[in-house]
Length: 481
Image 1 (cartoon, one colour):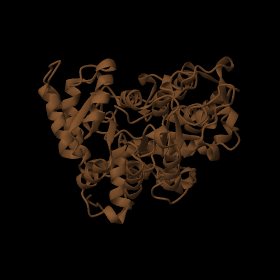
Image 2 (tube, one colour; image 1 turned 90 degrees about the vertical axis):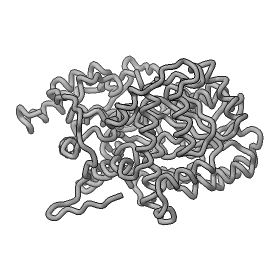
Image 3 (cartoon, helix red, strand yellow; image 1 turned 135 degrees about the vertical axis):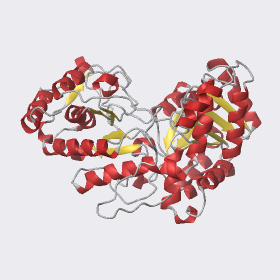
Image 4 (cartoon, rainbow, N blue to C red; image 1 turned 30 degrees about the horizontal axis):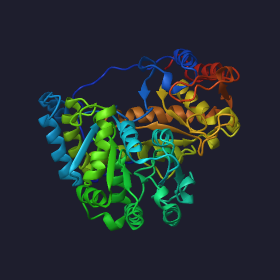
């Protein structure tokens, strides 16, 4: 990656692209923002696009496409069975991952559905470095369960550990040795979404794959966030710094039995893929793709998107391209940390993450501090982030309070969508919010009932704190947005 130094100012992330197409946006007034968050039931998922200035809920399917990707979409062979576009993507998968078999699906959670259907039997266990809601949900639907094997330091929110997504490989090996045939497969997530997009090291992934081979367990890599993880391997691990992104990818792919990914993240498109060199595994999964997704040469994915993903996978192998997301996230995190905002460190991939428990120490966990902070950030700025805590976290018993492992707010950074000036605006509003954090109050589920999924759960303010926050905003900013 090229290094750009500034002559007379502090370093800023430098966009390595030109903007060719733009979409107009606006900042709703603070009164409109308060009205919108009430209407959404204090659930940022339920905000509408017109309510937003910055949409930092996720990076899934909202990354900007290049002109080459948009042009490629016009070349799609819209054939129900045996499309040459499918063959083109097979060839691209072979070129990059050295995998002979490719099954398309409509998105990442469909990959998890197909894999769980194919490999999980009732009572079986899936060891993983960390959980992700859609993955564990599909495992549970098949009667299986998961076992976390993350090393303890991965849950330290503030640290200097470069690879917080690493397995506790001793625990993993002990589990495989003790459980034997009761292991459905081992899921390796690169990087780990729910602990701040933290990467997993190359050496740790290779060791996990070696342990799988030793105990005849299937190794399955969730590569949805792989592009950021590749960047961190290249820049944080001297052992692999001399290798190209393609070489690192090939080395990792060769160690894994199955790889799946959401192309809404990896590949800058909208779809998903399951790839392997094992024909028996391929045939086993293909049956369920045909049953639930579609014919195995499109699998619920648009052919036009498949063309775009072929180009996007090449972009994913370009170090300059994949460096921009982590660079923006590092900038956001660094600027906030330097001004006293409690953040998850070191910066990971996907987005920057605020430590809600430290930002709002006056709000107890049973009043959902991460949900409160996500709503307050929206009121202060018009930016939609995502609660990652007791509201979002899966729970075992609905009668128990579903406290999450962590209480964070994620501000995802869609690739090539926002500018440094927009990030500076967001930084300013978060700093104002921190200075006025005592105005923020708690949340509870509306009528005491939760619907069971953070996509559509509705909450309510336990006191009129949104109005207090808006009044202070008007006091400090006058007629400004």
